[in-house]
Length: 333
Image (cartoon, rainbow, N blue to C red; front, side, top):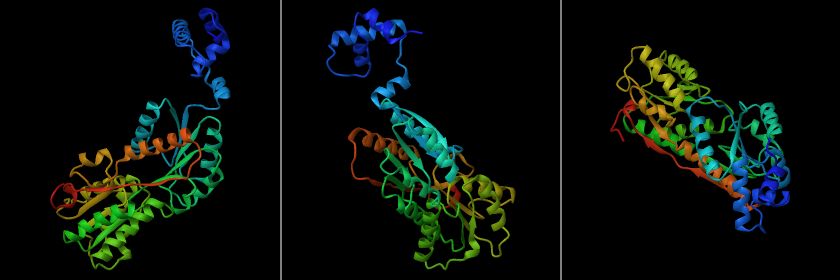
């Protein structure tokens, strides 16, 4: 294995000079930098990452902790984070917590000392409380956290506004019995999207019918099960608003199995606009979230914190827009 001493000997400089070149320190002439880099390249030398971290006190790695790693939503977030991190010369370490306090604690212990900062998505309001132990320890950006997260840089989605706009669209097209397949009970995103559903019904002069509310867990299976249950209602709802696209896709499958036509017999809409949504049959109407941009902005915010030191935490919000496709009727946008 080629060592830093080999590079120093071949380049005719001290070990300290090679270290300065590698850490981009001052007081090294351009000619010396070029000669050391050429020798290192010829010998195939690269510095030991752990040893370099001890000297520079940086790892050039960002930690990413998500509730899950399954599905297009999370893969798009990771894509946005990774793209931005790599442009800045950073790599990412990714783990999942399943929104469990114990899993969050374990992931934080594992990543501490191995990353310069962390991007954490923990929409579960109970699990969020364990994150407050991180305050002031190192830079953290929270994604989709609630009001208790003001001590950190946070980025949230216009959940309430997006859900209200989509349900308002269904009301405007004549639907009065609109079922909702919601998300997990303690989930911040799910709570805000339910609030948007209630707002749109109230604005349309429609009384809330608790029998039209179904609980899901953001998975396709839970959307399928909820749709099968709501088909047993009398009178049957004429539209379904699912709190994410995965549940809406599960609902579409259940309706197709039951011989119902979408949107003629029942309209369906989702939330997130995952890449698969546009390729469903029929294409899924949804609330568009630029998911990759969510990851990009989180990484940009974290990198800014690393480069600029302590500052006041920022709370940012990512806007949403309606994407009307064939699944809910009306003019396609």
